[in-house]
Length: 416
Length: 148
Ligand SMILES: Cc1ncc(COP(=O)(O)O)c(C=O)c1O
Image 1 (cartoon, rainbow over the protein chains, first blue to last red):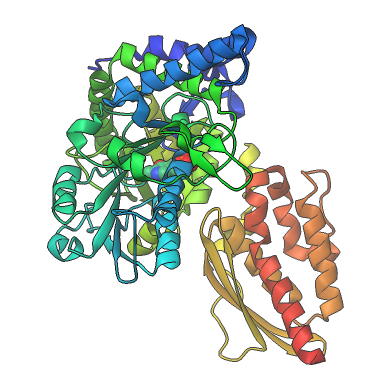
Image 2 (cartoon, rainbow over the protein chains, first blue to last red; image 1 turned 180 degrees about the vertical axis):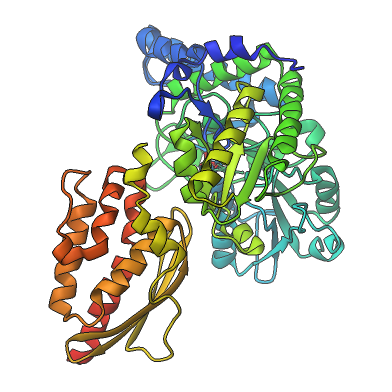
């Protein structure tokens, strides 16, 4: 049985007291979109505002000092969580901003390895979230570089058959997800990274769906940049992280300019502070950073390995349970090898939007639609899918509730 | 169940047996609309003669609400003058923004009143409007063409 005390965990999340439509309990299966927040995180934000609030890195008063300490303390917590140095951790507003930061900085920077010219290649995959696709399309547009991509196989894995053509001496950037937000697939990052580095390419990892769910160490991963969002890992909205290799951050030009990020300023120009400050223009999102650090403390107190084990067991249970439902087809791997707790499916004869609407009547919250991965939907020839995504506060009763609600949905639309 | 106000029998009928679905060969104007939040799409062909909607055909993928609504709309505007069709369009838009406070006039909207329940589900209003907005766009474009 489960390695986690889910009842105790659930009790930490005030939202589970909410009654849904028809007085149903909340069966929250949409953590892939955003996670719920424990009281510890809400309290950390409130505590910051009630005791330490001031603009970090400005002013000489006690509060300014405390705000700076809290903000930098949060940075240290996040750095430790991913095995990085504090100076390599940049706070952004979200993973989306983190990836845009890299893509814009590329076109602002005139030194190798950041210079892209016509014919250079940026490699992505067909299962990328729009946030890890469009910034690269736009960078390609600005520079004349070309977008290439790994295809996805019918069973939801990356097609590696042409990897040695895809990664070649023209490849400058490889931007890849650490776990698909639609299929749950975990691509072979180590293999891709070693091949990319062999040709001198920079590897950008979209860790939005991995950092919340399993232990991660940037040194072991050996990639060059990692992006993730706080709100998917029990933290507040409005804070994301960009980790970058120190040697690259030192050379990389910023993309947002203004207060805080400078070293000196004259009427004619300015020079930059060193990383990470150079990439954090303006008064930072201090309360959110502190909230995210509290979320990470919460996760590490339980243990990322235990969380991963719990989710793997639950994913297997969900895959087994859903496969017993007639007329339900799962997109993506059917086992838990290199696969996380994101399960997309189609119900024959029922559009995802209609399915989501009926599930909602039973308090079951799932995501429906294209999941910001429109190219992948085209690949599978569907307008969208219904997606259940799991987290540490879910247990078998949630999967059973989902299965029951799906059966009721099929009855409602008279397809079973 | 609250849901029955959304999924009226009439809607499910239109969903299973949509009217005027399948694009005509000829057209005065063709438009393509998408609902970017869910990926639903509609292509609509309009044939105008004088000021009258001779033919509306459409094709697309979408949920029961969007498909039924497109079906109802296409049947409703068939053979109507642009003025009449736009009257119905306004009435339908008003119904959709009513949050359940009005029932809709079935003399104007015919089967369209079955969609009244949608207005209580804000996330679904866009689905119901997809076909109607495509028609509006097509009609305005067709008019512009004629005036040139
Ligand atoms: C894989 C992946 N990448 C990027 C993002 C973008 O994250 P955010 O919207 O928090 O910037 C998401 C969130 O949906 C995601 O799942």
